[in-house]
Image 1 (cartoon, rainbow, N blue to C red):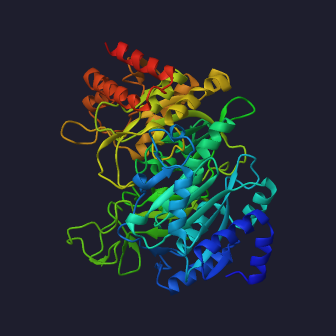
Image 2: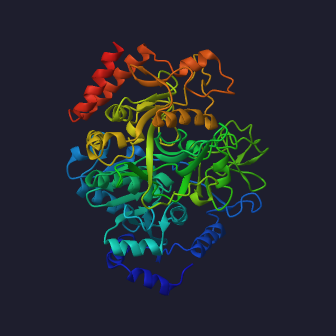
Image 3: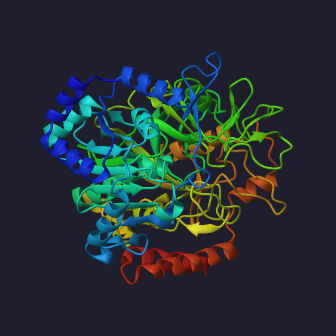
Length: 592
């Protein structure tokens, strides 16, 4: 670990940070304070300490060099949306999409939990930057935590350490994030956001979505508020580049709820000959109007915090290559060979192993070996298809924006918006079946506008209006085209209608050709759908009936969909933008 003189140097770099650290230390009473410098040697030393303390388990150095396994407390395996609050002076500013507490009450409640909570522990000071250090669009924070696991993950997911602290000193501002695992008691587990103060307090959880405060907390909930004020967007979106055999390249951003295939799409291996996908990010996009009037997207992260189950050589070979070294696995099976395994990994299950709870496990145990929301944390730089512009400080220009979710019926494979307002309507009415990424029942349909329902830091009606405003912020012909995709359609017998994974390149090809003006479409009541011959299905073993079902309009299903959207819109207590009311009315009129 770094020496004391280095800590003194780091602490002296920024008086505001040092004063805050001293204030928090008085409250939490740690055994010692450690300022993280973000160096490789620090990362290696901290990992060795946790291995020696048996908080991390080293994996086989031949098959997974530099990798370790972590296990969570059984009650601490997902985001706790019901215990996540946005604390604004005015309750309406938080909106019906957020749980709200008054800031004074929230601070008092959290400070009572933090009082003395780090006794006998180390307080780690983690300065970090979301976005390239040299980008004018990046934002910095400091996370104080008593979890070395969090420190290691922040090192992989952010630009953490000395350079970030220098940037904070230059900027004169940072987001304060205070975190402690506490006693992991679910009854004493809360995440509070104070967007008006640029601060976050998280207590009682070590799970990444609740504890890595640069991720959902800063990069989405806090950043979305800042973005509204400053005229940009902080979105729950992947960013990819798609290059045709002719060398034409388009950048796309896509918003899907957690565990709905963002990582798989972001680093997809296309099945179409000559097409190439490059990855810029799999989870978060910060989007701004560029100097030329187009929208530019930047990934503020440096790593992937991906869902392990279902990730395989078939579904995502590039992800498998990415996490093959220098990665952290959480809540998966440990095999006798000190390898990792999970369900739908594409390899045979071990005859025996140790499951995510640390219990002996066999395939006949009658329970899953890996938790459904088990994770890998891996450096983005290791992705075989990382885009050469993934750290471009200006971002990359977007040709299209996609929305999607898990919908077994009604919603077609791909649907193009008529215009920007119709695209915002599509995003605002997104619905998806819930997954294991959040606590609660999986498989229940819920509205998740823009895949931002758990992450928008302010009233979502105002968020919709902010999206609509981009038609006035630049020329309409420079805005990306908007699409809704659905890889999860099933037939009446429950069989998947679309093969997904690398075959999704066929849909992306049609989208890019639409942007270029060469692909055919048919106007329908719900949007522009591909004509029967517009999608490239060459080589697919697909019946005509399945192909037609994927691009057909179900009037009865869509009338029910419109009713559900209207019921959801009613929750915004009259604040819904008139443009979206009009879009819904027009949809109902077109459906007859």
